[in-house]
Amino acid sequence: WLTLGAFVGGVAANAAYGVAQLAVAEGTGRNLDAGWLQPLTGGASKINIYGAIEGQNVFRINALTGDPNHLGIELAAALVLMLPIYLRLERGHRYRTPLALLLGFLFVVELATLSRSGMLGLGCGFLVLLIPYRRHFLTARFLVPLGLVVAGLFVFLARRAAFFEQVVTSRLSTEGRGSSTHFLVYDFIPDVLAQHPLFGLGVNTFSVYYEFQTGKTNFGPHSFYVASFVETGLVGTLVFAAFLVYLFRRAGATRHIGRALAAIGDPLSARVWPLGWGLTAALVSTMASNIFYLTMSFYYFYVIALLAIAAPAVFARRLTGP
Image (tube, rainbow, N blue to C red):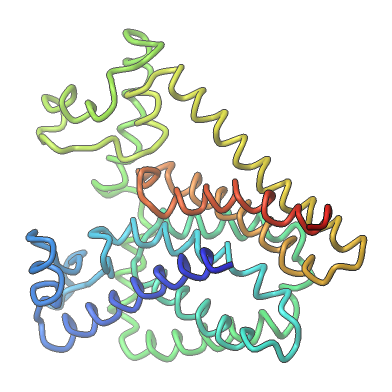
């Protein structure tokens, strides 16, 4: 639980910095990273500028990740991980209101990233949770916080309706250059597998081999699945697929332990069963988001993976005793 709290707290701190980043950029036009991050990292970083409408910049929060899509994907995983735990908290529990506020805040920041991959992951993770929590999503515990967030967003967006309408329309379009790039990279898979089917081109070699086509020296595959097939071939892809199946089985074991604890009347089942579903949804969310992005090598995924692996070992003790 401490590990889970530290992880979610870190994601929340990242999101809070992103809000500060946006507030400074919108209010003063200055780059907050210049005073806080650049002295630490030695690199050039700033909030993402998506474009401009009528001379006014459209900012996308990227916080400490450097890319708004990376932040959106991480936020989506954290949201679906914690949502089932929140839904099962008892009335009057000391974490119920703080967790509701936290989830609402993370959702607002998720929207501020304007990340389509993040929203795809969030939607897929939410669909997973609809199976066991469909009744909970019709209760005041879920609908009231969601309604407050939606109402607040409506009031905020209504003040500049035309501006935000153009932004949303642009992000929903699939005809732009960025969208075509995400689909284009999938064309490389059959070409590579035809020449190097077993082990691909080698890890981190995509940009080198395809520099003559992309015109860039640092152009990544923009998809975990493309990277897996192109850089590690069928062997590497099957190895990771086996590891992914193992992670889902461990998350499933946590759900099974939660049901077993409920059968013997252990109140901890109200935490363990939701944790198992949250881990399952977070894995689905991450895998869906990475259809068009490549964040599987980031630390957040390893934390989720290790939580999925460790949880059954920790909570099975409740069934066997000390």
